[in-house]
Structure formats: structure tokens, C-alpha cells
Amino acid sequence: MASSIILIAEDEFTARSALCGLLESEGYQVLTAEEGEGALRLALERRPDVMLLDVRMPRLDGLSVLKRLRDAGSDTSTVVMTAYGTSATAIEAMKAGAFDYLTKPVDADQLLRVIQRTLALRALRGQVGRLREQSHAPLVGESPSMQQVYKLIGQYALSDATVLIRGESGTGKELVVNAIHEHSARSRAPLVKINCASIPESLLESELFGHEKGAFTNALNQRIGRFEEADGGSLFLDEIGDLRPALQAKLLRALQERTIERLGSNKPIHVDIRLMAATARDLEKEVAEGRFREDLYYRLNVLAIGLPPLRERKADIPALVEHFLRRASRPLSIAPAALEVLCSYDWPGNVRELENVVERGIVLAHGGIIGVEQIQFGAAPAAGRASWVNLVPAGEKLETAVEALERAMIERALRESGGNKTKAADLLGIHRRLLYEKLRRYGFQE
Image 1 (tube, rainbow, N blue to C red):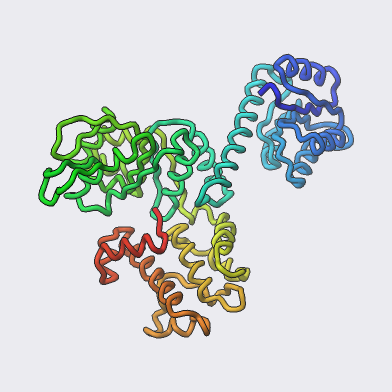
Image 2: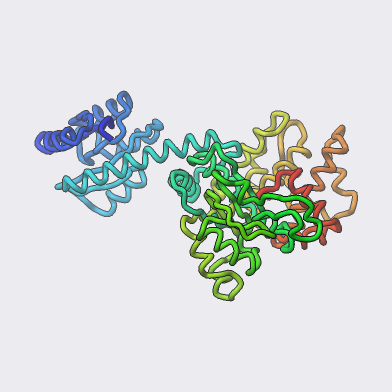
């Protein structure tokens, strides 16, 4: 904090001098301005970390300075100060982008605490920005709810505590897990993932804890489980709410003691892991109804992140669409009317569904533009079994068109089954194992 630069924009000499002396005694570098235009110029030229901004100043008032800085894209954090504190002034200051608002006379201890919070937030924002740039599969969105998610990712990456990620299917829970691991102290060690709902109960215990040769029929060799694979790194248990009671007890013991036993052995094995878990279920309800252990719930719910559904952050849809279009193999854009259609839809399948709809539009697009007619929710139209063929651009390869239809049908089956993959496979008339292969092929993520 000692190298941080603070600009004091205050027209009263006595107050300006007192603030300058206080902040210099704390080790900050201090700049001063006695009128609005000078403050604006210094803020743009010197780019201080924090500006203490008086509201009433000659030549340009403080709120006007704040708005001009915002319009110029300045990243200086501003704390507004005034002796004429009204709710209207406070609201206007915060709307214009102020970090905080203080009423004169300013208490020295309170001011220093606000500055420290401001600088801590700036450091965290920088960390989150690097996190988002470096992530292999970046989280996209600038809505307030996503900004909160980014802050929590940055904070949790510094810890080794268990994280529980909650949110509806398709909101990007696995992306959050990837980001936390990539920016943690364990980033060079493995991130091992297992979906608790995708493996039969009879096999899941062996998958988690491993087994010795001869532990059961067909156990022809010793096998280490996911806990041992993740030793030194992170273990992600997806769909943790689907775990059966018997395994819940064994998982609780493993988390409490940080030891596991392979099937067919009573020798404890110490594991050093950072656990992350995710669920779309209401765990509190599951606990109340006796389907999920309360003690395991509290063991998992140490650090929590709740991912908002897409319908609650529709302002992020244009940025998400642009992100998906950039991944296309050819230059593409989307018509404003088509984007409006996307923004008006409620997205029960969340970001994953949006991605699928955009990718389907990419396949069907004519002339490099996705129009309204290429926006299709669900599978083929009901007009007839072959009607979707008429929407495939002339010259489109069969494999590409078939993949687009296949993705759409899988997406619809998952939506209609509430994300239950066994039911989705039944709706599609295929074996569950084949569905999992297609989910991996098409990049469906939790």
C-alpha cells in the first residue's frame, strides 16, 4: 500500500493540507488539486490509485469530474467527500461510479479504512482480470452478479478450503472450478474431476477410493482412485447432491481425516487434496428430507459460490454471443433483431443452451450473418420431419448439419429431463454410455 498514489481534490486549503499530512504519514504518495479541472487533468495524466474528491469545487464540481473520468474509461477509484451530505448527492455519486461516500468533517480512522478497502479491491480486480485472461475457458459477463463471482474466485484461489459451487445446470460451475484451481497454489498439480451422477453406485466407491487386486469380481489389478490421483492437487466432485447415503458417510470420513482406504484393504492412505464440489440441487432441502447428511453438508459448505442463471443476467448475453462467434471457423456477425430474440428468451438451459443455439445459428447462417430465421430453440420445427433440412445452407457438409441436429436434440432431452442424463438417454432412445460420449464430444459442461 505504501507505493500507492492518492490524489486529493479539495478546494479548502486547511482541509487539503490536513489530508495531505495524514496520508503522507501513512506512506502514500500524494497529489493535490484545488479545483475541478485541475483534478480531472491530474487524474487522467497521473492515473492515481485513489482520488479523494470534494463535491463542491470551483471551475468543475466533483460529480462532473467523476462522470468525465467514467466516460474517459479511467480506472481510478474515487471516494467522494462533502460537507453538504444529502441522500440525492450520495445516490448520484454512487451512480457515477464512486467507490464510497464520506461526509465532512472526515474521521481520519474511517478515511484510512476506506482507502485500505479501496486499494484491496483494486488489487483483487487486477487479480481477477489476470485470472479471466489466462483461463483456458474464460467466464464471460460484466453484470454485477458475475463481478461478484469473479471477486470470490480471486479470493478463494488464495485459500485451500473446500468450495461448494451451486447453480442450475448449464451455468458454468466447472469453469469456476477450473479458474480456482488454475490460480491456486496447487495449479501445477492435477485437477481431477468425477461426476457423482454419471457412474453407477456399485462402481463409484472404487472410482473414488480405488481397490486392491481381488477386492471384488473382475478386480484383476490394483487400481488407485480419484482421491489418490488428486494427491497434491484438487479434486472436483460434480453433482455431489446425487451421492448415495453410504458413500456420503465414507466421503465425510475421508474429508475429516484426510485418509482413504482402497476397497479390499484396511491400510489408511493419507491424501493431500483441495476439494471442490458442485450441485444443482437444493442441499438444504435434501438435508431436511433426510437424503443428504447434515454433517457432510457443513463439511462441504465452507466457501460457497452461487452462479446466477442466465435469465437473471441477460445484460451478459451480447458479450456471450460475441464470445461464441469468435470461436467460429469463419467470420460471422449477428443481426440486431436476432440478438433481440436471444435477449428476450428465458434460457432454461442457461449459458450452455445459449452456446448451443448460437452454434446452431453458425451452421445455418447465410452470408456471414445470423438472422432471426437461424435462431432455433430446441430441435427441429414441428412442421415436418424434413422441414429442418430446408434451413441448412446449400453446400453445407452432411457431417456438420447432422452434428448440429444431434446437439439440438441432446440439449432438448436434457432440458426436458431436468438434467437427468439417464432419462435424457431414454428420451433419445440411446444407451446412456453413448450419450456420455456425445456430451464429451460436443463439449457439454456442468
